[in-house]
Length: 187
Image 1 (cartoon, rainbow, N blue to C red):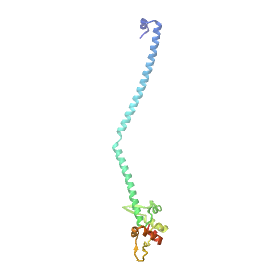
Image 2: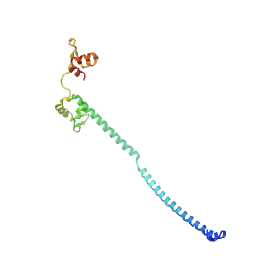
Image 3: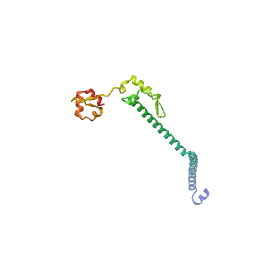
Image 4: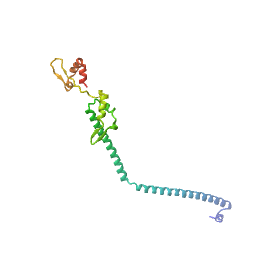
C-alpha cells in the first residue's frame, strides 16, 4: 500500500503511523520467513541424514547376524559341556585312585598338564601318584575294613552295612565299648 492511497482515507499523521507499523510488520514477517526457511533447511538435512541411515540399515544382513550369534552361542555351550565332561572324567579317575575327598585332591592338580583325547584322560595318573606319595593321608589305605563281634561272644562279625541297620541302643553300646571301631564304621 502506498502513502497516497492512505491519504485519501485519513490524515497525513495517521498515514505515517500506519506505514511505520506496516514496515515493522513486514520486517517481522520477513524475519519469521527467514527463520522458517532456516528451519526447513535443517529439517531437509535431518531427512537426508535419516534416509542415508535407513539405506545403511537396509544393507545389514540380519539373517547373517542371527546365524553368527547362534554359532557363537553354540560354541560357548559346547565349551561348557566339554569342561563339564572333562571335570567328570577327572573326578572319576580321582575316585578310582581311592581319594577320600575329590575336591581336596583337585586343589593339588595342575589342570594345564591334563589332556583329554577321545574320552581318555592323560597326565593325571602321574600327578595322582606324586600326591599319593607326598600326601598319602588324602587317599584310602589298603587296610581291610574292621569288623567287630557283638559282646555276647557269639563271634558274629558286623559289616558296615549291618552297622548302618543297627538301632540306636546297639550303636550306643558299640560307641561305649569300642570307640575306634564305632568311628571307623560311622564314616
